[in-house]
Amino acid sequence: MSWVPAFKIGLWNAWLFMIVYPLQWLVVVLLPKRVAERTGHPSDRQKGRKGRLWDWATQGLWIGATLYSIFLPLRVPTGWFYAGLGIFALGLAVLVSATVSVFRTPPGQPFIRGIYGISRHPMYLSMIIVYTAVSIAAASWLFFLLTAATFFLQRRQMIQEEESCRLRFGRSYIDYMDRTRRWIGRSIRRP
Image (spheres, rainbow, N blue to C red):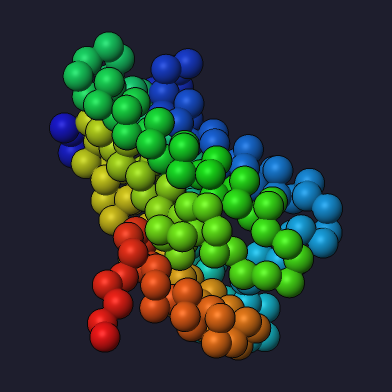
């Protein structure tokens, strides 16, 4: 892996992996309004000034990582690339599964079915998996550091979204949080 950032525009660059998020964002923007309103994201008023700053930092990092991916060559056809490609496939499967679960959830209900049964935030999980895949496929320590920063910023967003869902859905969401871990896995119920 290299500490030196690569800057070379090419067809076989990391944007091939990162394109899934702008495409998924486009799908969400084009959703019917009734679907888009169910996401459980807290309003700007609920977040406060500090929460909005965290959001801007997270979005800025996402945009920066996506732009950097345009210039970051993948290590084709090395073992780094194939290992990253396998991890990317997992991240893409998580993202698609989460998006399908969102579409299948009836209005006014929290997302708790499908992959949401094993991760309270599978879309964030998919992003960390895809970013890790890019880091490996491009053999880039710099992108791995972007992945780590994204992980910590997303954790803050998760806490805000969970609070919003607790207020919106009440006891059913608290029970869901008791059953399902934030990143991945089922919680062990204690008697």
